[in-house]
Length: 283
Length: 129
Image (tube, rainbow over the protein chains, first blue to last red):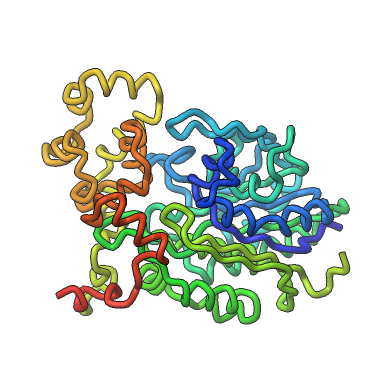
């Protein structure tokens, strides 16, 4: 059967993608950002997932204000890097896994999570920056990627608890899939940042690090954090962290923390990164 | 509602909810349009004429022409849509954020390099009074 064995959480700051694409990874400003992923690249190269389920948000690339889906699962065969106003990032096309994605859709909708299904969409930095951080710059991405876009642009986004429970439903769905597939789930975005108004530049190290602890050891508690607390404590864009709860819900209750990294700043944002493995996973 | 809405208590922050989205729909859809290179060129040639195609308010048009990010956020603009306007000018998001916060690029950069804006004193409007 298929099995989600681990999760990867990381920020998806667009400037990180630009720094990579422009060859600035060794510059003093960016070097500490990329250093945080040295272990991670080796870890995922050894793990060799067949499929990544990548939870991210679109930033006015595939979805304008015409249609605002709360959860949109990519069931298509391929997803092109989006042109975000300066041409698409020079990264490979993302190939999906339509069969597994359709199975997940079928299962979680019957579990009462009413997903929007998307067969055609371009994917922006929210999805491609985490792939770059984990896989570098291959000719082709080394695995299939199923995008799961979460609305965090127009408030309210789904609650952390809803995201956590969706993760649990995805876990169940994947485990019902008959083919042997090793799956890793990415939860991306965050950590604290605010990109608007007079409070722009807000960073909350203490809150962020507490969130990393809760997510690892007490996810039920992390799931109960209300929307308003994310905004007040971590900035209007810190709310992206609810997406980390989808990935956490998709793991077992007991996990091993394999890697953690935190660095300020990456542009306007606190960069956070966490890798968790199911305790039962033997590698 | 009988109680004060806690969403209204965050200082220096406009929450882009369904109501703001309605207020800013045409403004944001204009921004979306200039994500396309041909539209961007056309906008750059004659900004005023291009903006007149979108049934936004006159204040929204004026603020686009003035690139007043702070006010645009208050009157329905969403930062991810507005980003397309500022990227078209070659501005980085860090610089746009500095402007909204009333800081120079250098002041803002120094703040970020020293750990960012602290949440202390910035959690509630009562702390800004």
